[in-house]
Length: 59
Image 1 (cartoon, one colour):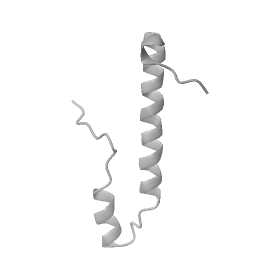
Image 2 (cartoon, helix red, strand yellow):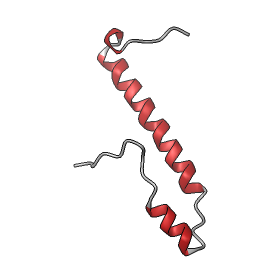
Image 3 (cartoon, helix red, strand yellow):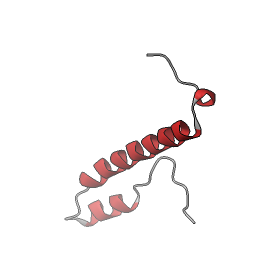
Image 4 (spheres, helix red, strand yellow):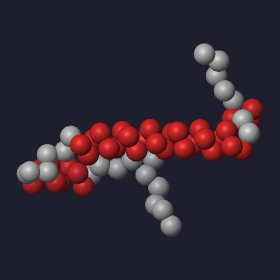
């Protein structure tokens, strides 16, 4: 599969790629949350430490 250069994408294509990356990250974190044992204090402590790999504060 040929690689796609960002310079070759339209503004819509760039936004679509960014959305795809963010949805993939959301799915990854969702999978981590689904595996957390919330029936124990350790599980709750672990849940508090889950963060997206590219965690950015939202304003």
